[in-house]
Length: 306
Image 1 (cartoon, rainbow, N blue to C red):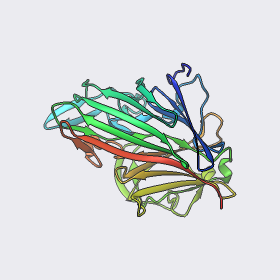
Image 2: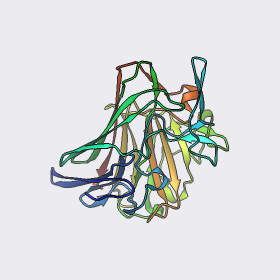
Image 3: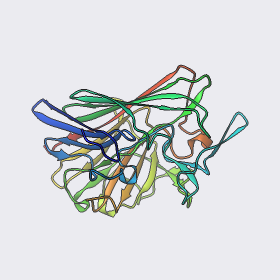
Image 4: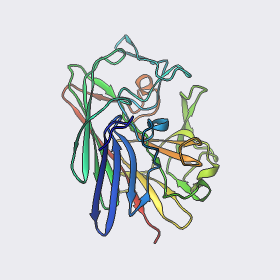
């Protein structure tokens, strides 16, 4: 372990079913810094000694994305969150991005815990935990949130991994996802409406990563018989990194970054339980009663070419 702007560094490793699987996690923001299967990177790494670029790998609680002007109203009471995206005058990505979680680890899994305490704009008390557990295919991530307060609390969860397939360039990577609808946004990247995907945004047939310019949330995802929706990034020979999300995560945000360290085009694939501005729209928003617990999972796996 060593100290870093992302806090204590945790390294997990297993050998299972003939594969060697590793993961690297940072304490601050419970950030997922890396996942490998047999030495193939499934997550785009960023240099040690630097904060997470573009929220890379960070857990976003109790809301992902943006809340317009940081304002929302509940039962006639107006709430004002801190403006954490001054350029667009929004509150962005929740309240734990810069929190140093409490860490409990083993060789093959780690659980990181942090509380959301009552504060300006969010007068609720939450206990949160995220567990990264290695499997023979990659990593399974499980989020648990408990309302430890005396009033029902609104929550939404997102996370912000950047996925890749080894060092394959963006011109040789194909992105495939199932979203039939996308969320149309205004100039401040806030929702206007939900509409069918346009040809330039449709990922169902696969698109070359280098050709994409996305900061786009997708809805109406297709879920397989096992209750998971899957998104793939595939290299020229057929090796795929797959990000899956369970039925609690009904949305996914794709973001293509062109200033990510070491990547010509970096792809964030962000499972979310709700889209932007859910505290105002109510779309996808979860209300936890006092003492109630939410649990949801997603993961990243490797599918080598046949």
